[in-house]
Image 1 (tube, rainbow, N blue to C red):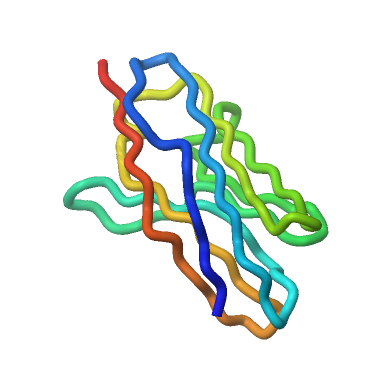
Image 2: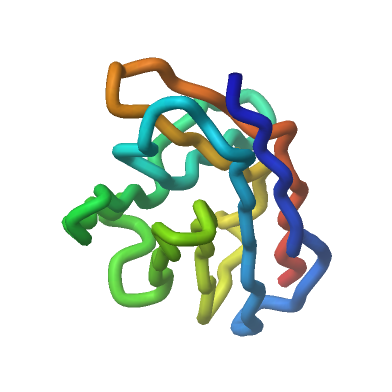
Length: 116
């Protein structure tokens, strides 16, 4: 079982920046994919950004050029630097990791609110 602890959400004005961090507890199996999803009120949860152990990334089109994902494999942490935030980025952001045998885990979520 992997425990995820998220931090870094909050309230920011449009155009501002926030950094989210997620720390994963030690696991029997290596963590393959680490990333972030978000869910806005009344909408489905959607992918924001993910990164594999090898460094491959995948971003939602809506955040490309504004958000940057990074991870520290030795520390089992993943971060999301969010710049040029827009009101449409307002959502609960969830850390998600998947281990080497394909089991996925979710964090508890952290609120990001962008005011116009």
